[in-house]
Length: 193
Length: 193
DNA sequence: CTACTATGTCATCAGTTGATGACATCGCCC
DNA sequence: GGGCGATGTCATCAACTGATGACATAGTAG
View 1 (cartoon, chains in turn orange, green, yellow, red):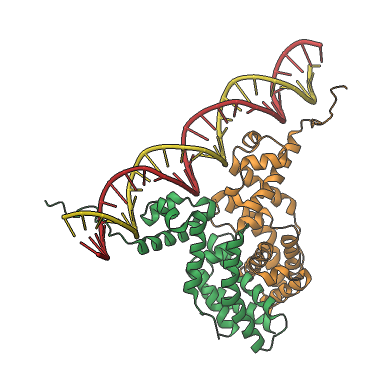
View 2 (cartoon, helix red, strand yellow):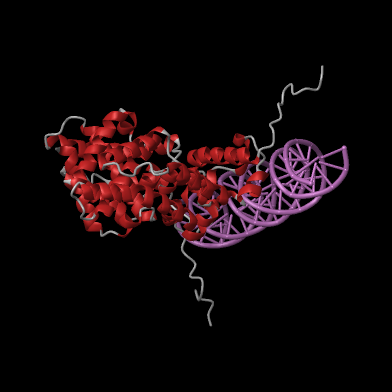
């Protein structure tokens, strides 16, 4: 029997893929266990990479955490621009409800946001979410306190998705997604009237 | 100079006071740092008690955590019974907003609630919050999906208070409490109509 | 006063954590 | 194909964590 790749089909070296694997594993584990609860060893194992690479690529564990936020910020793009408020809240809800809590959603619910983390949140939430929503509200004739109302909607949706995901509110957790979405649209409507 | 209590006025031994001090210190630190982030040594130091007493009185760190939840559950009483929905949401908001995140609010926002923790949450939230709210909605003529709507309101308020407290949503964080309360009442109204 | 229990203090353990640096190996450029 | 930087592996460190049990002392019942 030749010493071919019988059991361990040795991956080709690919730092980009490795970084990506680490970020994705970190995203999942930070979500499941929180920042302190997710260990670099566990992240490395899930990513199929050596934990020491975290230090090499991201400096340290916190750097990796920041990277998960930035990664989401990148992929978010201009998803919500130009939509009316009903559509924005519907899509935001679906995104946060379907994909599980995203890193940003998780970070927004964290108790002790580090300054760098807060900065990432502000840049993502502010430009990608609050502004499109506020514009939509203004166009719907509700210019007054449009930014505050937008952030209230974002916070409310965050809380709803959070408690739905972790089972803290059992009826809400079991409810049909479309029914919840409908009620959220009602809430959004109450910010316009 | 007599060897009186000059610097260290040696506290009298009082296990009840010690337990209470530990629970309060734990409440504050779990809120600030999360469960993993708050160490038993830090809790002991803030409480002015030896960390070993945590093991004596609560079994272990998690027992202390459960105790903080039970403590809040005790003091909550029947605060919200018999009020109409507007009043319930107003008081709930003020409580969570004014006192900082309570242990229960914090636990509801946690990613990985332990079974015992979830049980405490359900008993407190279910009986003390959802039921009074649902009754109020039913009396206001909205019997349909009253429990779901109640939990949506609770989740929404949780998210709003959370993001207000940690600064994730800057406009909301800076906003006047009464203005936010007014908007929350609007949201509650949208669940009735 | 004596003896006993409740309460508090202290030193220490075994396990885990994030981080580091030496080393091995790959893949590419010339 | 020789050389060299990029990439990955491994062993190990110092710090910290939750927990434990031996010990000290206060308060009290008899």
